[in-house]
Length: 165
Image (cartoon, rainbow, N blue to C red):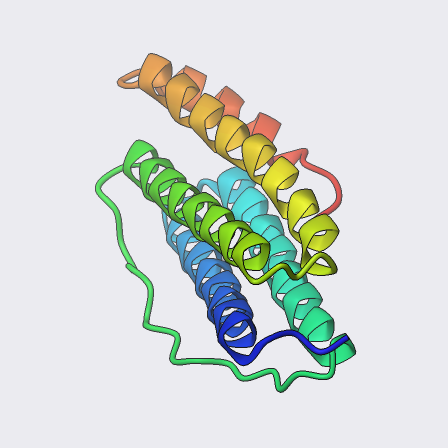
């Protein structure tokens, strides 16, 4: 069943937002690499891959519903940060914006009585809880590690051990 055009436009906006998040994480990864924090760089690169996967999921969902998938303009991400904490706080702001956008998309699907979109979006709602919690916990740990290079080294090493994407 084809989704209403206004809902399709909202799904396309989310597709674009997921690509924006992917680019942001990739840029943060590059910044961490320049800081010789290769574990954090690796973690962010995997996060970028995950966000690109989300974008493709939105694209495929739109197409599967007989819609037209269109990618909007994706602005250049912030390229440098004052500290690792600043980078993760930026990521947290981004995750919160994605969460709110998905909530709005869910509400729009409900309002359009587009029952087919609800289960698809529910998975993203659940995932965003995990995303925000994970990034928030890392930011909290970076606050604890401030000024302690050994603690930063240990956290960087730990984040470099992330598997999957």
